[in-house]
Every structure is written in C-alpha cells, then in structure tokens.
Length: 284
Image 1 (spheres, helix red, strand yellow):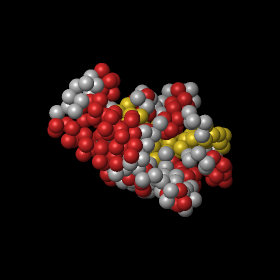
Image 2 (cartoon, one colour):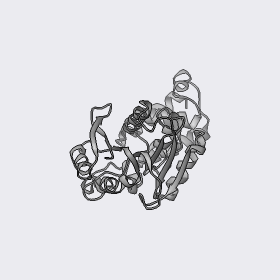
Image 3 (cartoon, helix red, strand yellow):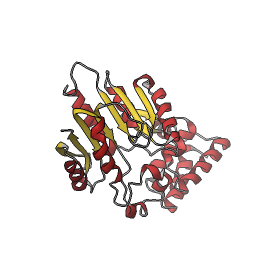
Image 4 (cartoon, helix red, strand yellow):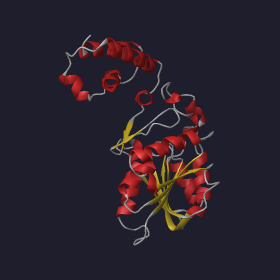
C-alpha cells in the first residue's frame, strides 16, 4: 500500500474508535514510523511502504486506539521550540505551560532579579524538566535547581537536559516538595498537580494514561499550592518571585491562599486561549 492508502485506512480506523484529532495523529505516527517529516508524506503520497513498516504502523495504531498518548509512542514532544524525550513516567508538556516559562523570562529579562549576579531559580515538581530546561536555554547566567519526588521522572529530566545541552546548568534533586531543599532562590516556579478529586474521575482515557502523581492535587486540587505558599517563602530571597501554573478555574482560590500567607503584588496572567493560567506574586 502507498503512503496515501495507509493514511486513509488509518484515519478511518481512528475515527471509528472515536480517537480525537485522528487525521493529525495518523500523519504524525506514520511520519514517525518512516522517520520522515509530515511534509514528506504529502510530497511522496504515492510511495509504497514495505510490509515490515506497514506492520509496525498498524501495531502502533492499536496503541492509539487503546488511548496511549501519541507522545508516549513516539517518545517525543516539542515545548518552547525544544525537543523533549517523553515516556509514561512524566506528564506530557503542554503549550499552556509555555505561558509560565514566558512570564519567568519577562521577569529575568527586565533585569529586576538580583542585577549584576546570576539568577537562581527553583523549579518545583519538574517532571520531564521542560520548564527548567527551557529556562536554562534562555537565561544565560541562570543557576537552576529542579525538584521532583519521582526518581523515574528525574531520570527523564536529566536525559532531556543532556539532549538540550544544559545538564551543567541544572541541579536535579529528588525531594518530597521542600524536604531536601536548603538554599534560597530569586524565583520559585512550579506547575504542580492541580486536578481535584472530582475531576480526576472525569479525565479522558488518554489523560488517565499519564502519571496520576503528576495530576492529583488532592480533594480540592489545591494541596500543593498550600504547601508552596506556606513553605516556599523560606526558600526565597527578599522580594523573591513565585510563578505558578493553575487550572482555568482556580484563580480566586490560589490568590487567596497566597494572600493569606502574606505574599504581595499578586496578579494573574491568561494563556493564549484566554484562560487564567499563571499566578505571579512576590515574597514580602
């Protein structure tokens, strides 16, 4: 069968199984199998695919039908223009989180974080390392510590630091939140687990394939914001910054948690879809 014929068949199968974005996923998966670009599929649509590659493609399609995320099949995801290795031990980086990184870069770029000295950043709940690594690539003199409780997630993060040539700029630390943190930082950034108990039950089958520890924010979804607000200020320099990703409906609750803990200059930034996405504040 040709590339075009394989795609037509795959798209139909995925649609029949109610797989979202079936056309895009079929194309991306075939490009992965052929080790070619999406554009190559269009230009060479009449190329015949040998039976071994067809068999591999069909086997991987079965994984998609079983709701395995495409990123776990291809072990790849792009974030902030960088490529990351992704597997089932880490949450898949999403475009929404780029807003969080961009807000950190604005603060650093404004030269209001400890000018004339390297900037120190603590990335709490680092997962794949997407936030820490993106910052390391864009902040020349940053000293970054990336923390996670999961040993397996840290292995992925370290691999991504190597892939993106920033392994010497990041210290990776296995720690249950702040339990092993001892230094103070200019910026604390985090995309913590924030899905509440009720919504955990309603997650799509595909999202449920991602590590629950990276999603579950406790009964009200606010467990980790409360920990960060209460303990984070111990690990911040005077007037240090806190930047947190939040769920679309958590603005008021997270702002209140931070206000009650004495943080100042609390603001919320929307993502590209105009959803409340990032809370920014400072230590008094």
